[in-house]
Image (cartoon, rainbow over all chains, first blue to last red; front, side):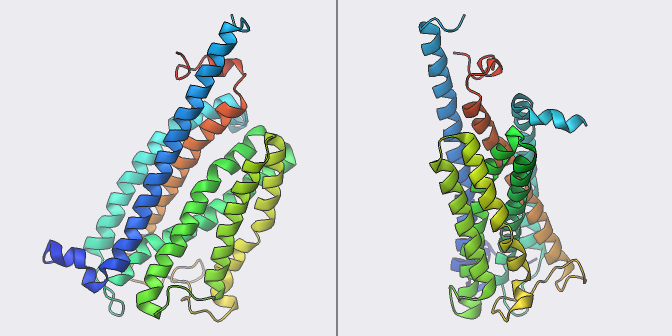
Length: 62
Length: 244
């Protein structure tokens, strides 16, 4: 067993700032990328819906 | 050959829609296993104490930053050689994830370098060539976004991807070719790894997790590029996600 307590785990042998700063950056970076991609998908889909509604109003679509 | 059918955008759209959820589930499972091995099974390093645990994300992120760039160069070459429409879309879908891993490689490296070398950054060959890789990613993204015509954007981007790929072997061999502060490879194809088996396993599982994440992300993102470029196609109008 590496850790006798959660305090010891979070302390990382005194390297907490460096270890959690690394893992935290990876977690934040990935979360941000996922959020941006999700946002982009919503934007593309709503733009497509809008485009088709306009085309339908103009009588270009059946 | 059966896989050639996926060169058609609507087929790739459907295939990507099936792959990305699987890839993300795989990424989550592998991350949990990798973190368990890395934090609970692998012991502290006899020289670096607990700080060495940064390796379980630093090395996978660095590897992925190179692998993704090579994958982009492959798609770029395919696009230039065979004029396949989906090649440029795949190249563009990979770039942001590659840039993220490249940034994370530098970031985690700085946080590891400070306690071990006493410096956040040194201008040694390994670090400098990885920084150049980040600029290549950002240059590729900026260039392809700046050109409105998709085919011209793809072609210009493909040139950047193909020219820039010479930097990847430079990164890989930099620790051999030059005297660097950065340590040499602990894992290589030619000799047995110079690290404990359980540490190696944790690193490999985390690498697979990052692979799965990158695949999921690229296939998720390529679907939007397909929709944007094929917005007038009949099949797009028939998608249930478009229906009002």
